[in-house]
Image 1 (spheres, rainbow, N blue to C red):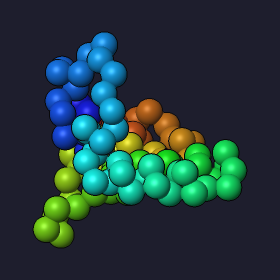
Image 2: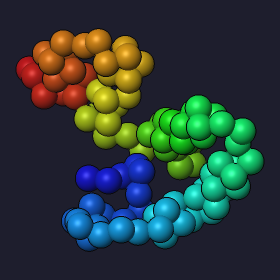
Image 3: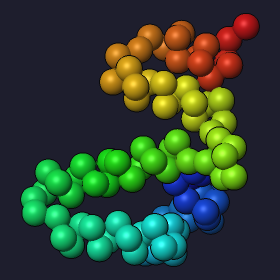
Length: 96
């Protein structure tokens, strides 16, 4: 599933190239403007990473959009990827 990164289901975009504006709308235009103004590759990469993290933590009307699996991935990101698979499964609600 491509959510929360895209408003278009992943099954509809297999083997396709879409302009980011078609997927993110106004957010893509804003990011594009900030990228054009960035002074270095490192700054550009940081801007993109920040936007992806913002999308991952996205909220609508104050409600989080993250599924249990997405929350587990967010937790793994916060741990800088240094996680055990069983801990990741616990955070995703896959183990009993």
